[in-house]
Image (cartoon, rainbow, N blue to C red; front, side, top):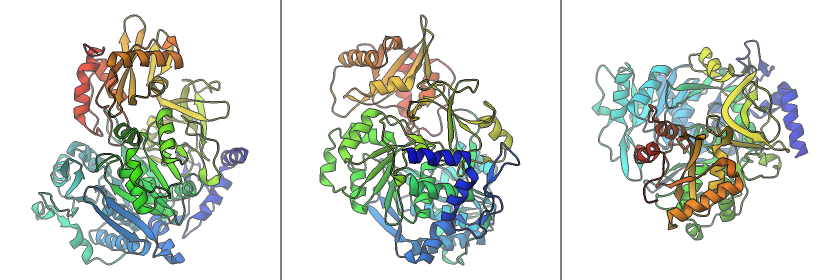
Length: 637
């Protein structure tokens, strides 16, 4: 642990030396001579003057090193019951061919390409092909509504759009082409060409939309006659991709990731945090439309020369709660990465992990989790079920890789349940109050990162340095403000409690909703929960909990309420004034698994709210509206 602290200290005190050393693990056409350009601070740039190609680093260099026959990508579709394997040589050839197809359509270095695809191999091929061209991809989660897709089209102004006839859900097929056509019209970009990957079972096809005034092309036909393209050199500071983040209001923010810093940071993280390299098989159960999918389905494992599993399915329901265990056995998965929400879903459906009994998961040695706080109950359950280290890590779309993590590739540090461990190299973390003054150890405050951010973090927002500074850098001078709250213990371990607005003021006492949730999650009947603050005439606010029970639980609601109130009093104290615990069938979440607490609070307060475009199932929110607006548990509870 002291060795890791020394390494982190080196990265903060002499970042140039630290990251130039790390950059040697990347293949450059012009190696970096300078680490950091601070001439436009707070707009920093990493490795100015250096040149490389990210697609070359992910594919070609492994083939040239004699590993072309190694499996690079495994596609496993629980929806179709099919699997497909690509070696590094095969994937490189597919990517080079499709890059040639894009070039034939006029895409050149710096152009934007919008990718709107389900979890199919073409999504990975498209991303790497765009990178091979030196162009900039913007992946939009497949199935986004036309208005949301249109806002991203307007902002990115893509040269071409890549899509498929549709995506598969456990109970339905989602037609993509009508949504793409509507989005193009809404964005005033009806003439933008579209390349469509045909999938059987969908109503529309590219030919249905192809007209003289707009080109809609079949993917396979476009690629068939193309000339394979060699990698195009770009500046390390040139953008690799735009990834949009969205909230409940305002236009989406296009996070910009550069080529050089991204390659260096992800390569470092794969070796030193995730302990993944050649010979490993990594299953990241996310979607390529999210940052976890970008970093640890596509780029990270391939930069590391490992095998990555692209899974089209759900943690439960495709067909059951044993989906993850099947994948581990079938593909010899050594390292898995998923969200706490997925683990809670498995636990809720199969509390005793009975489904695990039919599978051999002996290849698995590490499970990583991020996306929401990994509550201690879920942590203990999954660690007991799998018998392998469970490693929490915390980061954001904006940072691109873990801000805090347990560096397993460096031997690791002791695990503390509920904590993502220690800051990663380059992240100079501080817990501060509203004025930017560091708070005492153990005191909750705003989590902020001293500038500059390390390689791999966002460099700006697409089209607006001003908006980037306004959104992240101006609240506290010299800091990037994360928007999350938390505290550090005596050993420097971070405990993330939630967004900074997830604070409940009970009679002048500021209480963390996350801390109360952690208490509720200790109850053996609770699968997951959310806590929000409701208005209270006497105390200003009071905490109200909404809990989902594990499958098969039949506890009396009144008894559960008494037990949960007692649990909060024991673990938080009477000051919490906790008395409301409502059993619900499900909690409203985004497709990436984050619970929509802010929207719940807005509904409860009677405020105008917008249903987030990222919501997984709007019906869940609809069913909660009466409970939230009433502000009290349902009658007869």
